[in-house]
Length: 312
Image (tube, rainbow, N blue to C red; front, side, top):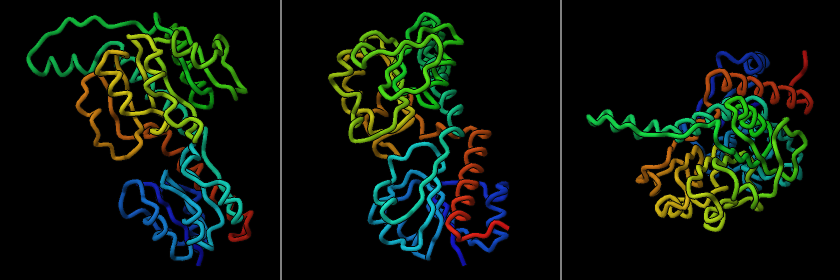
């Protein structure tokens, strides 16, 4: 019997037509018992029962994982990022790797806009003050008056640019690999963007080349009132340097949905001028449902192409 592992922390199997089709074809499904991001050893254990297919989260899919799963033929990432997968090792073992780059894009873009508006108008600290019996008359800033610097013009970055333009913000961007540039967006070198943008938001893949893209030097190059947002990957930001920049007022505020170690329990929790969320970028009901269905459809088609499932 073919076995499918679903390693994401949650997954709606019952309302997923491609998965129901796989079940009807005799596929056995094993889910993540820990309900969180898996470690390397935990994903090895889940795949150990002869799994041929994997609907993957963001757990490390390394050469060691693939060596321990000799029957694995298809990996379908439930999401866009591929940095957690050793693509070269997968290719060497003949494992097809697929993803769903379009499905989560709107959800992450809208969360980014939520961060921007909340930080500009200081919604969270005002809410806390009112609950404490205060009545602050806090003056915020208009998005329409800001320059938004988008780093990475992929599926998500382009949406963020268009949403900010709808609020009449000026949008600049940095992406040396951009193939589609929204109308009205000005491309510029990274250093120029860092010095000119009021809001800097990351939407670029993580790799060795982009590790700590934002560090002490880049924070020092920003405007003192700059806002930094990362809803992409944790390793893009040096978290210690970010904390120092916030404490020394080198930048004014930040929002993070992703961290180098998750769940996050680090010192940024003590900072009052940062929004911290628990990697929920894609967790809008409509986007999540689309992403799960696309991931399952990708897996189904991959298993058919591999000859492991018939197309009848």
